[in-house]
Image 1 (cartoon, rainbow, N blue to C red):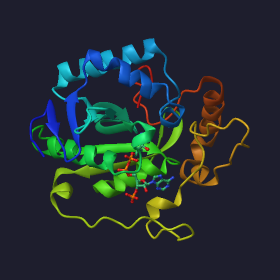
Image 2 (image 1 turned 90 degrees about the horizontal axis):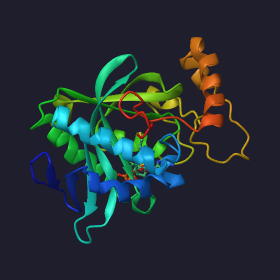
Image 3 (image 1 turned 30 degrees about the vertical axis):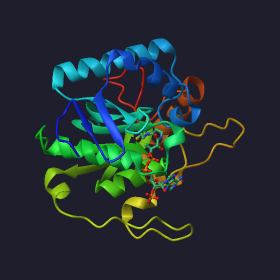
Image 4 (image 1 turned 90 degrees about the vertical axis):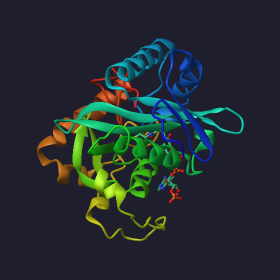
Length: 254
Ligand SMILES: CC(C)(COP(=O)(O)OP(=O)(O)OC[C@H]1O[C@@H](n2cnc3c(N)ncnc32)[C@H](O)[C@@H]1OP(=O)(O)O)[C@@H](O)C(=O)NCCC(=O)NCCS
């Protein structure tokens, strides 16, 4: 892996900081329901333009941000991932964010991107820790966090929806950590952080599916149960949700 910040290569991918001419592949990503189901819903061309402007601005202000990742072999756009300032759970944090074209899922590419990004976060950028957070129902994203060594911290409401907040520190990342085996269906998770796989979110893209109750969320946020149910109502009508960074990307891109 190369060690520069603005652009670098991994085993299968080449990364370059997002630029204005990445609009077209980013827009295609934003038009894919499978991808955007966990990122606040589909985005139009103007929302994508605005999100891209914010990503570019983030790079200018902070010296890091999101990268576009392309296949080394074909130069085809695979997705975008990176680091960004965000307020989550009432605190200012730096978040690891990632989203890939659905055709590229489940090949270890998000993990490959994120591992290279963390190397820069804790190396050249000198960050002490990085958070990642996702809807409690986003199992693929939670698994990526797990593989990277992020540790469960707490449940938070973000954009009015239940999320898990995880964190990895430079020190933890430096220590080798065994990767957990993929979970088999029906096997009860051993660690406490996994009890709350609430299948409640704006990610429930099927409007014909009955709304699922989330008793475990109510357990985690007894005082916020009403807020969550209100958020569900907002989600149903507005399609905004989830895994997003509202303070930085008003468009809601995650
Ligand atoms: C989340 C996302 C980035 C993962 O990308 P990816 O390239 O498929 O990730 P990886 O292949 O590195 O790892 C995915 C892991 O999740 C597992 N996984 C996938 N779907 C799963 C599910 N429904 N339940 C449990 N595990 C699942 C995979 O098996 C794999 O684990 P393994 O290596 O132990 O087999 C991708 O699904 C995506 O872009 N989703 C839409 C945007 C999004 O949700 N971004 C995250 C916002 S917080």
